[in-house]
Amino acid sequence: MFDNLTERLNRTLKNISGQGRITEDNIKDTLREVRTALLEADVALPVVKSFTQRVKERALGSEVALSLSPGQEFIKAVYSELVNTMGGGTTELNLAHQPPAVILLAGLQGAGKTTSAAKLALYLKERLKKKVLLASVDTYRPAAMDQLATLASETGTDNFPSDPKSKPEDIAAEALNYAKVHAYEVLIVDTAGRLAVDEEMMEEVSRLHGLLDPIETMFVVDAMTGQDAANTAKAFADKLPLTGVILTKADGDARGGAALSVREITGKPIKFMGMGEKVVALEPFHPDRIASRILDMGDMLTLIEDLQRNTDTDKAEKLVKKIKKGEGFSLDDFREQIIQMRKMGGMTGLMDKLPGMGQLPDNLKNKVNDKSIAHLEAIINSMTKKERAHPEIIKGSRKKRIASGAGVEVHEVNQLLRQFDTMQKMMKKLGKGGMGKMMNAMRGMMGGAGGLGALGGNLFRR
Image (cartoon, rainbow, N blue to C red; front, side, top):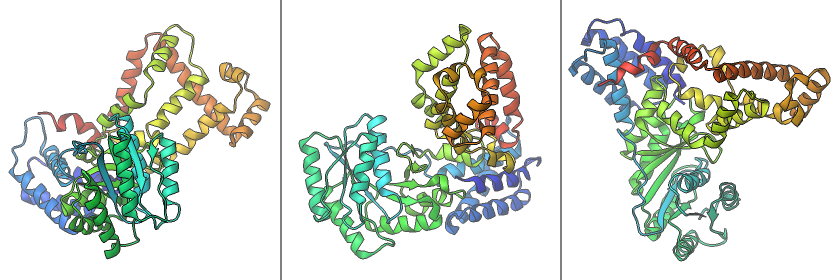
């Protein structure tokens, strides 16, 4: 997400970096470029106009901090206004209600409401430790109720058995009563959508709102529809007392116009951002972190949280002890690292959160894909226990068998063995106290990113 905007802003903001001071004349061209970048990202025109005007006022009216150059001060102004445009701060779910707290999801057909319902249930269950019940009142879309039941089963969440022949209001009333009787803390209700906003759909969801009296009424919208997402959200906000927005399919949108338009046009905060179709891929929306990603400064806070949430500390400690004892790094250990990386969103998800990644050449970016990570795991799974313990025995005929079992070419098996050999050598150095050398090498690599990534440390120093 935001790839195009990040690339354009990187080029644009370099133009002002050599200026001695900020004046209206020397930022005029840069502001015009910022405006063009936002329009190309499909940000709504009224939002673009107010954004560039506020950046101009902030940049010209601010005192340049001693630790910042005028160029960095301008970038800081852009960052601050990006944060403000997307809502300022993180808006948490409001669950302060006599149980069950009802969350009503509304939106157009195909926006991802059903998947978002399951993702939200998993988020509440795992991170907030809530007892959650899912219920579908979508009696129009074929298999909508079956889809939610399947997703509920995948996430280990309870699902209310709905009858598609019943009226939506009857299903909602029964689900609410069931949630009360069985002491559920949260009830998430997935409503029906249409291909476009129509009166019948709005009347139905309004009746459901009156019946359920939800503490949260969330509008689910597809990020790939750009500024149309903001316009559709406004149409719903005019009819329903929305409390927030869930932005779906954000990983499929390289522009980011929806995220920058929804808050300002509707006045409703984006509370969650859906990345991918997997039910684990739901993130709370942090405007400051998203602004940092847009300016290619990375998102280390989210990365650290992902690490803490997805890393098995017991396994990690065992691996460290094993390496320190000189027992070596095995292919089973390598596979475990691949699994952990996949849980964190894979290589693409990792790169999205590292500073300076926007400045990598396209040919390098294109080489990084999560399909190759899946291939690595498949190759290791295709090996015998003996082969994983003693990779030196993997020769010609074994390589062919492993490649065939994993559905890959032999050269990919060779590539994995080379990668494993490199990592094994690194781990050996780590076990011998070579951490300092490794960290210095990593610092050198990060320093080479340059540009906005290198500015990150100074930019927000108080």
